[in-house]
Length: 197
Image (tube, rainbow, N blue to C red; front, side, top):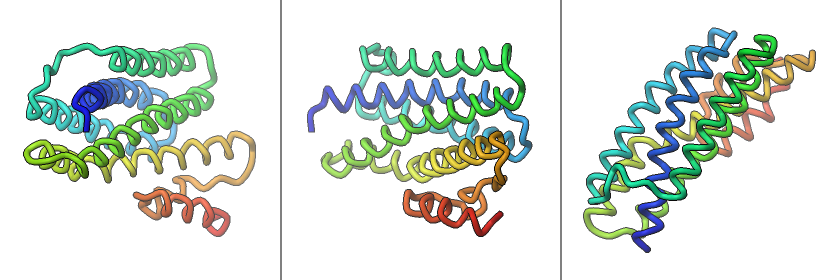
């Protein structure tokens, strides 16, 4: 495993968590559905903890916590753009449309976050010694929550769009009702939605 790409991945992961905090803070302001707002408030708390986990991981591996990399700067820009998109929606769109924008922004942020943790888990499998232990412990603490964030948020975005189209929606979404934490579980929940109408 090459150290430079691992460092860049961890800096991007840190920036993703930091941006995720701002994304959730803004998304909560857009939420009309109380269940969605409650879920996002919980995810905000978890994301704040995930930021600490990545900071501890970077420090444990002996990397400079404040180092700026091109990848980190790009991830920061994306996070700021997602927040800006929600702010625009809050200012200029109907409240329900702003809520939809927020769900999409959360899904976009969580897609990157999920990928980061998937890659950190891959790195843990191939690392050795203290690095292996540190990477594995971080994944153990965070990865399942990241799975839930992505799959549940995707379900919310889909079902709120379906409702906006005037079609029968399942709210909270099936992913929520079935407490989905895997891609297979998400596919099954989505397939079962017709039975939940």
